[in-house]
Length: 224
Image 1 (cartoon, rainbow, N blue to C red):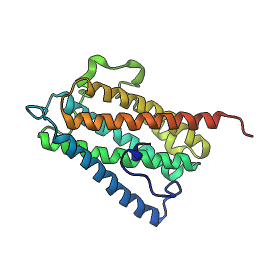
Image 2: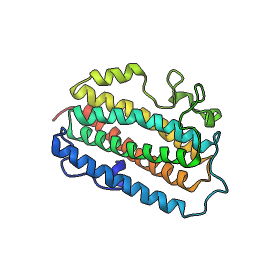
Image 3: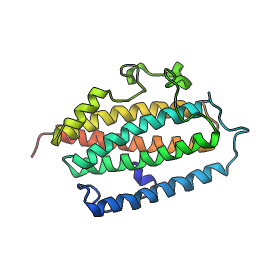
């Protein structure tokens, strides 16, 4: 899972969130953010591009769009963490929400440092790699892998094993779309910080895909 790339989650983090666990999440959030910042600093001391990415750059487009993409994953992860039927799904939701929220913070910082708009203009989502978009990963003209409002409502209303299953089905598709976007920026950037974080995202999401596929297979297997 993606948190493992920076810091192991605290013991017992899979259950519902009592006061002590909320404290644990805060501590872990600080640790994850610190780990990401260390890696970011190491990336920045390597050879840097001649100029910061501009308003129309792939890097700026990726950061703006991935912030929105990650925000939906955080919402989904919190649903799974708070209400998942199994410890594995609650832990998975915890890891995804925590890691992607930390990455959102880093991308927002990039946009400030580059002095570009923090928001994508209407109709300009994914313009930075539009020619390479995979139609199989797009629903209703949305970004690759994004769940629809109807699917998000269904997740919020689901319970028990049905919630676990729907969360993983939606998140698998979400991660596939995210990896498609990550591959797109890696093909278009020479910025070391963007490359570092994009590769970190891809590695973490690929590991989570394996976990979710295994958990889904377990749900579909007949009991003993």
